[in-house]
Image (cartoon, rainbow, N blue to C red):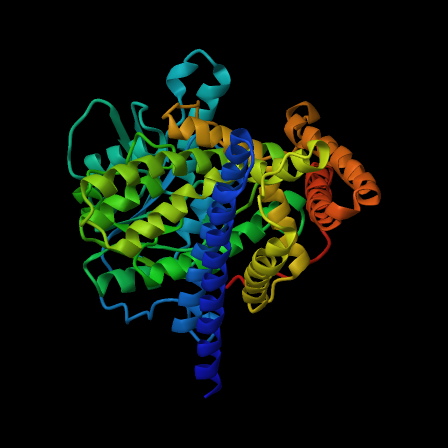
Length: 554
C-alpha cells in the first residue's frame, strides 16, 4: 500500500512540475510579446526565454529518467537486469586500446584482465601509439620494446596497425583482422604460451569487452554480462558504470565522481529501461556481429562510442545497462585534465547531435519518439555552456544598466518560476539522498560543471560546425595547478558579478519601487559570484579530501 502511494506521489509531483513549467513559459512568452519595449530589448529577452526553456527541458529530461527508475524499481539494488544462469561460455576478446599510456597504468589493467574469472577469454592490447611520428626518438623506441616485454610477461596478445581513426580505428582494424582480413598495415603477435590459444585468438570472438587502459576490472566483471547477452541474441551491447577510486584524495576527482554518479545511477538506468542506453566506450561488452552489422565504430567522431550507438538502434539491435560496478579507475585530478576530458565528451556529443537531427529527418521511423527524444536530450546537454552565460549576463545587464530582459513582474517569477525551481531542485537532491549522497558533495559537483562553461562553449562551436581539434589524451600520472592565465573567463565573470552585486545593493537603497526585482537579480548574481570564485578551491589538485561517503555506488 505504501509503495503504491509512493508511486502515486511521484506521478503527482511530476505532473505538478509539468503544469508549472508550461504555465510559466506560456506566461513569459505572452508578456514578452505584448511588452512595449525596444526591439533590441526583446532580442535579449528572447535569448533569456530560450535559455530558460533549455534549462527547464533538460531538467524535465532528468526528472523523466528518475520517474522511470522509481516506478520500475522499489529499491536501489534492484535497478539492474536479472542475470540468468551462465550455461555457455563463448569466446570473449578483451580489447585494451592504449595510446602511449604509462606502463604502470597498462600493467594494472592487464593484470586485472588476466585475473577475470571468465576462462574463455583472450586479452589483446591494442597499442595505438604513434611510433611513426618519432621514428628516431630513442625514448619512443624503448617504450615500444617495453610494451612488448610487458605483453610477454603476462602472456598477452599485441595488435598494432597503421594509425587512423584513433580508438575507433584500431578496434575496427582488429575486428577485420579477427575475420582473417589480410593487410600489411596489421601487426599481431601472440605471447600466449599454449599453441591452442594462439590459434584460437586468431578467430572472430563472439563478444568483445572494451576496457580503457586505466580501467581495472573486478574478477567477476564478465560473467553476468555474457549471461545476459547469451539469453537474448538481439542485445548489441551491455554498458556498465565507471567508478573513480581516487574520489577521497582529490577535489577534482571527488566532484567529477559526483557528476558520474548522477549520470550512471539515474540517467543511464532510466535510459536502459527504455532501451536507449548508449555506449560509453569502456567497461562494455559488445556483440561482435552487431558491431560488424553497423560497419564498425564511427571513426569520424572523437566520441566514437556514443556516436555509433544510434546505428545499433536504427538497425533494430537492443542495448542494456547493468548497474553494478565491475571496473574501477581514476578520475581526472586537476583542472587541466578535467577540462580535456569534458571537451572531448562535449565536442563529440555536439557532433553527434548534428548527426541525430539529420537522421531524424531522413529516417524518422527508424526509432521511436521516445528514443529520438532521449538521444536529443543527451547530445544537446553540452550547449549548456552558452545557456549558462545568458542566464548569468541578463541579471548583470539589469543591475548595471537597467536593461530589461524578463518583461514580467517579479511577482510572476516568485509565484511561478521559483516553485518550479524549488520543486525540481528538491526532487534532484531528494533522489540522490535516497542513494546516501550528501547535498554538499552534490553542490561541489555542480559547481565544477558550471566552471567548465568556456570549454563547453568552445566544444559547442567546434562540434556544431564540424571543426576537428587535435585529440589530446588525458594525462594519467602527475597533477599540476592549472595556469590562472587560462582561467581568465571564470575570473573575469567573478569580477563582473562582484561589481554588479555592489551596484545592486546600492540600488536597493535608492530605488524602492524596483526593490523586489533588484533584490532577485542581486541574490542570483551573488550566487553566481560564489560559483566563479570556487575556481580557486578546485585549482588545488594536491589537496587531500576529507573522508566522505559515496556508498551509493554499487
